Image 1 (spheres, rainbow, N blue to C red):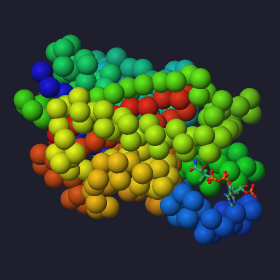
Image 2 (image 1 turned 120 degrees about the vertical axis):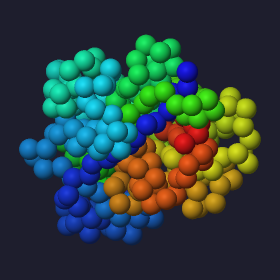
Image 3 (image 1 turned 135 degrees about the vertical axis):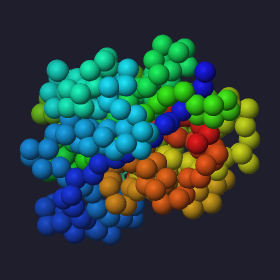
Length: 310
Ligand code: ACO
């Protein structure tokens, strides 16, 4: 049985933090941030809005889009590195909020590649026929782990959530191939320190991301028995426009064939791929039958790519 996306949803907090706002908070400039990252603004969740609240809003939208009831969800997987607390998991909190009574629930921790890991885990249960509907969510409240005194990282991140319902789809559709990977030796380049803040060696992460995103994208195209000409649309992790552009150029796609939300929402880690997908889908950039490549990388180091037919 093939597994694919039955519906999607997203949630973004209302509060906008622009580069000009950041200029007042630290020694930075709109010009530096835009030129070096492509980011113009990001969303910030209020103090009383936690990952489980954002996950709930995105999940409700995805269930509606998929026309699936919460009671029919078999498993909930939430990709996050910013859970409300270590346990109970965001997935369990979401199960309660949705009233998804028969669903098993757990969080998946693979940093910015988390949504790729969750989607592939979900698809295994669907393909074996074990479960019919798996709700996956990528959600982050990165503002809660941002060191607002560190201009190297504070300008990069934002909050938000994206969700998808994974279920059976007809022959030739859905997930065509995937690649997941990890390299624990790269851990010192991107991690959370004892003060709970994000610490990053930007240069090293940049080099790794450019190489890995390109290689993984090409690998899933080959594994699916496709060529570059078959690819209609690219959804890269929205970390930095320069990294995204490098992946797009590897796939020889024109600018309009790549999802781009990094300018509006910054890097929302595991939420960035589903948020960008919903954006592209709602604005008609992704069309029925299109072949998509989704590709992400994150702290760990981790990475993941998927080729799928929409
Ligand atoms: N405003 C102004 N100047 C800044 C800022 C800022 N916000 N941040 C750094 N600078 C300065 C540095 O201090 C440095 O100044 P110096 O030369 O006087 O020392 C100069 O800009 C260059 O800094 P670098 O860090 O060397 O710049 P680099 O070219 O590496 O670009 C960047 C930095 C944009 C962060 C880049 O390295 C990058 O995008 N890396 C990947 C980041 C990323 O994708 N992270 C993912 C995080 S989590 C995840 O998604 C898995």
